[in-house]
Length: 70
Image (cartoon, rainbow, N blue to C red; front, side, top):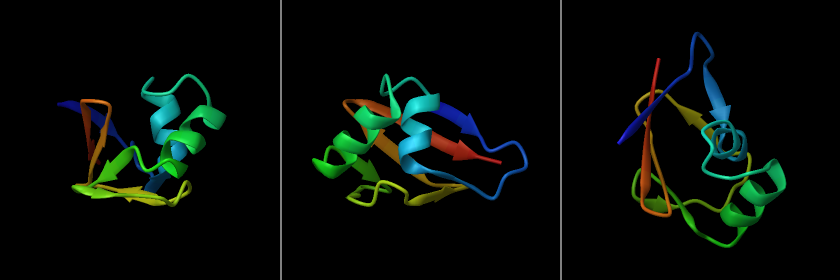
């Protein structure tokens, strides 16, 4: 499990998180992966590309897991 720190921000949008963590090569790719139902947030498939990911949430994509911390 990898960790992503919000560094003082309240949230990060799901598509941006996928891009900045390197799980997707571009924002467009991240949006497509979410739209295809390939991303889970807290164990549930998430279809909202701009879903606000907050501290304590877990994002899963292609066998990798990101824990969001503050």
